[in-house]
Length: 147
Image (cartoon, rainbow, N blue to C red; front, side, top):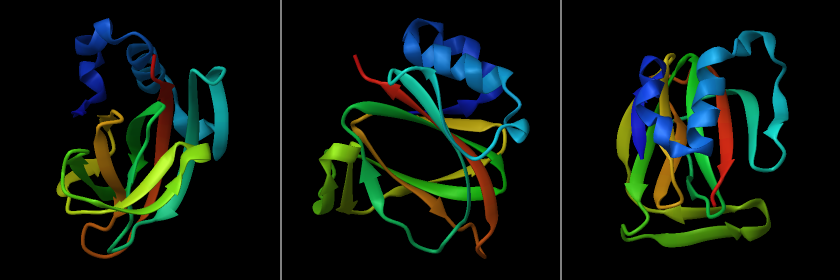
């Protein structure tokens, strides 16, 4: 897992596709992009611009084939994180959608505009949790295919 600010992406030059996705994140005005999915490099790198309301509780998820880069564009949320080795119970598997949901405890990270979080397949995460009252958020999630 990497938690950092967009100004520091130069520190990740050796990360191949992840760095390419971080450059896109740093150099794109997402306020001008519509909601939904678009491709940068076919199924190797694609992104989704999302808007939603945070909630007091969300599911913990993990992925197998893709790395998530999550960056909040507007609003504030908590993303709970945990290593995949934590004690957990499978809630639901969606292998065809590269997703599995779990019951487990997570540690909170407060996300604000300008920060990003890189979540590898060994990083479970619980996005979209409210910081206090539910609030509106705009986010980009960039999916980077694992080699």
